[in-house]
Length: 242
Image (cartoon, rainbow, N blue to C red; front, side, top):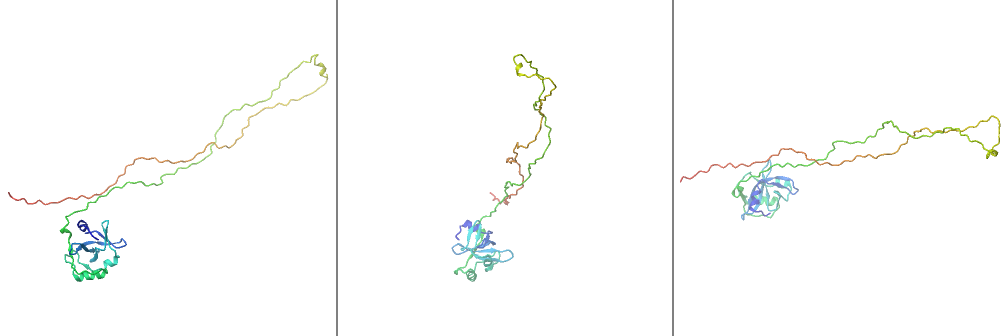
């Protein structure tokens, strides 16, 4: 993998992953060949020595170095002491090429210290408060039907028969139509009357349903976030006397 000078400086301390993406360790040092190209890196593994890994076969992506080997292959590779400034000898390179099954190269490699080309820098980080909403049940609405008794007062017109006595004189003109009788007699007339009758019936009168609608309102959200501050402590430089 061919890197720029800035990318080489940023390699120090970056995560080293195996071919599946699992973390192996972090970059300790970078070794360059005679042309200044980065070729090997040491991988810091907690509690162990720094294993060597070929950089020219790796991929650098999103600030991480991805090796085309599994974790056990890198961790079992020949290593170096922490923070060594000794170049890799021919014997060390031969062992490394044999371990990673790479074509051997005979030239010794020098470690490329970061402080020779990189200015001191820090990464300042801070927390951001991400505000969102979460929907959850807060109450239950129910429809409940019950029966109540009410008194109803109303009126209705009713009819009844009343008796009146009507008398019609028999004149000479119609006397021939009537046969005179003498004796006791009795006749009846049936009288009718209406009275109020209340009959109850059940009829549907209304459809009642529950419906919900969303109401948007503003509510304050409080939280605490942390951020880093970088202060420069510069000692006073001596002044030259005039």
